[in-house]
Amino acid sequence: MSIYSDFRLARDEIYKCMKCGNCQEVCPLYLATRKEVTVARGKIGLLEMFVTGEAEMTAGMAERMSYCTTCMACNEKCPCGVRFDQILLAARAEGARRHGLHPIKKTAFTMLRLQRFFNFGMKTGGKLQGAIFRRVEGRDYGARMRVDLGLLGQKKVFPRLAEKPFRENRPTVYVQKPKLRAAFFTGCMINYFYADMGEAVLGVLKHNNVEVLIPEAQGCCGTPAAVNGDVASAIELARRNLRAFEDCGAEAIVVACSSCGSAWKHSFARLLEDDEVYGPLAAKWAARTYDINEFLVRVIDYDRENLGRIERKVTYHDPCHLRRGQNIFQEPRDILRSIPGVELIELKRPDRCCGMAGSFCIVHPDLADKVLAQKMADVAQTPVQTVATGCPACRLQLWSGLINTGLPQDAVHVVQLLNESYEKAAAH
Ligand code: SF4
Ligand code: SF4
Image 1 (cartoon, rainbow, N blue to C red):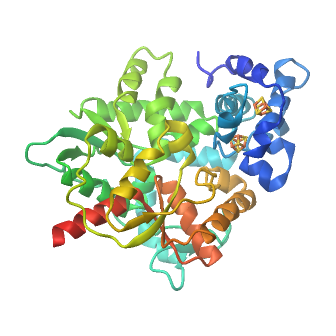
Image 2: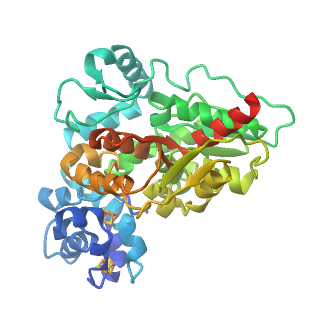
């Protein structure tokens, strides 16, 4: 039994909370709203009433569980060691079992399960995007929706959809005398939006003599489904990905998205705890999955000799699911500092959530914007030309914030800067 299938397993975590309110100090939603329902303590209070039988889990209580970006800042701050992320996952799954999913989420997760249909939809969207999006004036990237469909609003800036998904017909990257054979799990954002990040990952790995293959049968990591309580979809997607990678012949899996990394390292094993076939596979690959920053620094000791100069002041935004979800925050900084000419200037609060949080910014766009505004205020006070990060979803949110706030910076993944540096050195 896992927390996804039995809410009672979250009881001990709920009872650990002594209601001190320390989580208020760090909760981005509480700081934006000052409403108790948005912070861990408020939600735990409601769930305690459900656990003791004082209250039913009504549709209203289930809806209140949507007020969370799953940033895990409260976990880190809590003096009692409450794992609020686990409580929330259990509560959302229970809410979905009792009251079903919002129709938009249900449709979205069904599409993710129908991989071919989803792929066809995204490719068609790529071809028709001129009718759906208009370019942002004065920038060579980014587009806004022409019509407000009630999702995210017209202000939100998106990257342009790739006409050809990154993974499509992608050959294995062979190198002479490979150090290692790795499989690249791209995730949906890189596959459909940020091919430049995918190319940078391949470029950096190739430069470091890593052979890279990209199993074509991979799909969404299932995080959107898992965090919204659609356990059946999350399990189906986890199994599909494990099947796609199990026999590919790779020694390790590399990811460049913080949510995908957390899924492979933590969620798959939890979702498949009771599965005699896939449970052991999930545990095996959890131990062999690496975020690209971690892989470069800790596994292959990346080449620091042949780096070209990039004269740039750069800051770094910590993705919540990389820093608090995987304890990776030193590695991207090590990489940035190793690039000649790059000056790393820290944000006031680099680990403050950007407000993206997957479907959170669809369900609560105004609140997501308030959280993003705080991040942008931090960027505005930091004299840099580039905001680097470690997750495509954060990159999207940062882009949107930078453009809408009128800030001139670009947002990129750390690996893009490293790849640029290698390319500069090679060009000389
Ligand atoms: S910090 Fe921890 S113990 Fe204190 S109210 Fe928040 S969750 Fe409860
Ligand atoms: S996970 Fe983040 S948003 Fe959710 S309650 Fe904790 S601090 Fe607030």
